[in-house]
Length: 401
Image (cartoon, rainbow, N blue to C red; front, side):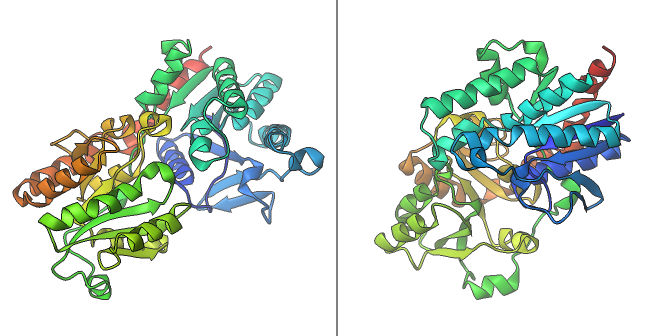
């Protein structure tokens, strides 16, 4: 069985999207399936039309040119036909059995056109509703024309595809609310490659000295600084936490759109001594920074994106034997069982964030069991071998039609 995956972008670019893709492809190959791969023009300009990365071959799509590619909204639609043509060219070479398009819906539109021309079955995978991410990024407003058109496009692709997968129950339920048949949608949950994560038992001594963390209790966040992450809530809660635990510091590793706002907030609250912001660090050094953190905090704000979509970061933290405190948005509640694999607090509630953090940090005897429970969750349940196995009945049913 050979599956052609149609992607927004891929490795060597680094993103949660590309890491999930690589994990899926590697696990599918471990099961004995063949895979081939086409990326949209959003990959950017590539030196070669066919590129081999980490043992995976990608057929690249050249960015469109012309007037339409420069006009808002039309520039997005202009990506569809070049991707369709690249898929068809790759099909001629690879002779796949199944097309598997991954969101956004533009990829789905291109794949539908290719599927209709070739008669191949199509699976469409939704990782997020991109109109909701656009709201947070400020490129559209909820329920404006662009938002509604994008949502309608997604529904069209879902209706046209032969089978649909989502990364979590929140996205699945939203599709059910749109009238999509229950038996058409399968959840392929986010997971981790457990063999890539070792339990961290001690701090990196060089970094501990560099940031003067000896004798400090470290709260932490490692990732991108988007508005929906709610990182300003941790900064706002810090003075209250310091009243009970004066040796706390907050390690904020990464960068993004909210970086300047966070730095300004730290300065306004006079917390420069208690907030450490190293900036972005090389991917190979991320584990070293994880080692410094006693409690990872994920204070995502309540909105459609966070209620419907599960993040990867809490799973990666659990895999490394780290404690997790997160807001009680829907995406987190699918991953964290309060009091067993981590702790939840009321989203947007700064006082509860502070009080819960103090309670957790003051109750060290509960840490070993929590760490063990979190590690067991990712080892036994949320690993890629388990998740990818869920594709098999979908593919087999499509090939038997």
